[in-house]
Length: 248
Image (cartoon, rainbow, N blue to C red; front, side, top):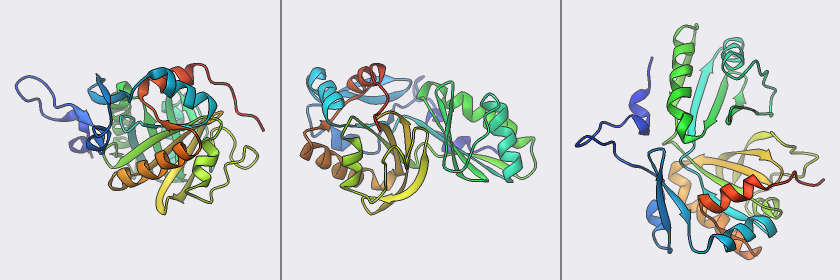
């Protein structure tokens, strides 16, 4: 069964062009001096001012970026079937409970033994969705579901990222308890969600799109209290290009 009708990038063209995809809280970003660019069909926040100040926050304290443009695709089915499909699409990777894996910039995150969330760059969302739907259609009791619009997502980056989370949740993100590639479901800011530690001091926070403004406000306020700030995609890109693994 196809869930293509849920895919933002599959919207019907109007006057020869597809509607631009937008963050669920774009109107919140517009309250600031925000710069936008269109990337891979999405209207992306590239910055709120001087990129240098945003980059400094990511390196010295914490930056919070709206990355709702990431694709979120869920594979469901019998655990053995799900494992076989993921291994086939992700270079033979074998997922472990609480541990995600990355292949070609796509993160494969095990929600349960029978549910895996694929988080994709926007350029790859359509391709991965087609691959998942094709694999699920030929497997017994498996399905693929498009959830990009259902989830909001923020990147929380910098040496004080863990402290920003600590101000909104009791989740223990110490490296010894939450190493790189750790993935877990918890409540943050009193709302259900998921956290992925991608690399070093880089975390991806996923939550229901209906909570996007609330979660954004909570984390940006926490970042500002720590000397950080909201950042755009350009500062985030530069910070991730030069990041180093987190310390113990």
